Length: 200
Image (cartoon, rainbow, N blue to C red; front, side, top):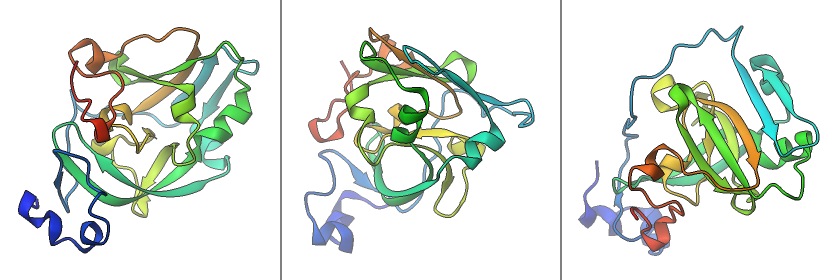
């Protein structure tokens, strides 16, 4: 891991000194931080549910997810525990393509990400409309490993990494927000790393 003094030695940060949010430390590695152990899925039975305040709810098999149009996004990742990893390459399905698939109603203001072991987190629909938001199954050219949220992970680069929920199983469009696991346990619901919105 790099230390704070290495911030100005990294050529990417030297080129753009405002690239690293306040209070963050650069790392070349990708730390594994999870609450609980990775699930073991039978991918022939695994499903992704897309439901709630939508006109066309869907339940997708793994093969159906992989045949959706793919997109690649290069984005930095910032963890609430203060590490940042730059220039991650994510491949998956753009969130806007999921929106086109299910046609959310105008009443839908938030999306709840449902994951293994009843873990949830939520985000406003306008945040998920950014071009860099996707559901990812590959990272830096290889399949996303279970430790890092595989087979499928929500990726929301402009928020602390706990909002990029691991082991994604469903997305629910809702009228009213519902606090997720970490938010109920003291984490800030907005999670903007540039404002250091780490905790309530």
